[in-house]
Length: 74
Image 1: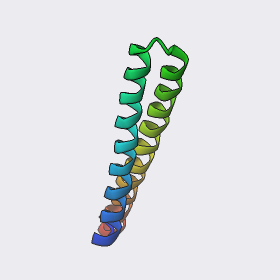
Image 2: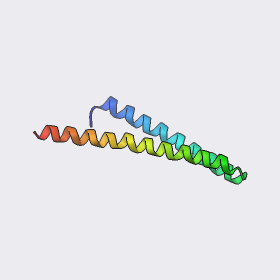
Image 3: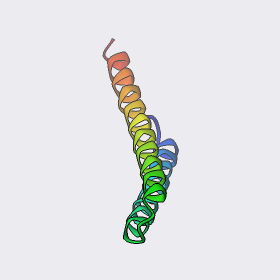
Image 4: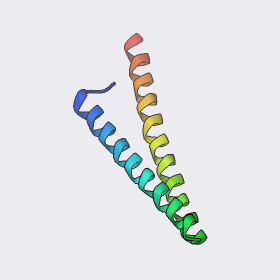
C-alpha cells in the first residue's frame, strides 16, 4: 500500500466505523425487542450508512494500490 502510518490510520478509521456499526445493530435489536420499530429503522439506517462508508474507504484503498502498482510497471 502507500505507507505504514497511512495504513494504520485507515485501519483505525475502518475499525471505528465497524464499532459504530455494531453498536447501532445492538440498539436496533433492543428497539425491536421493545416494540420501538421506528427507532430500529433509524438505527438500521445508521448501520447502512456506516457500511457504505467502510466500502468507500476500502474501495479507495484498493484503487490507490492498483494505481501505484500500474504506475510502477511503467
